[in-house]
Image (cartoon, rainbow, N blue to C red):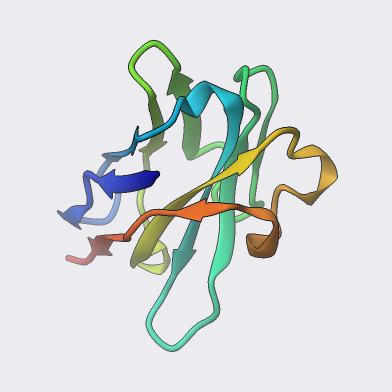
Length: 125
């Protein structure tokens, strides 16, 4: 069971990136998925989450209206479209999967069962 995040890179403020989370070894459609990020010297923080069906999504206030989480269960993929990027979005971004319902605990790292390695997003002029 593996998750792999990709799509990070260096962009200027105001730019966009689409991060991808790919699963191997299991069917991602059975899992809720969250994106978290960790900036240098800071704790890991919740960014966005999506239910197994894609019917519900949640966002941190800091990224609401700029980031969009989505999934394509046919491709076993989850995406994070990140627009209007700011310097404070600079961090390593991780995807994580939780079997079953996310419910109200979607922002807590400890409820997730599997984590991928991170992908670095650097926003700088």
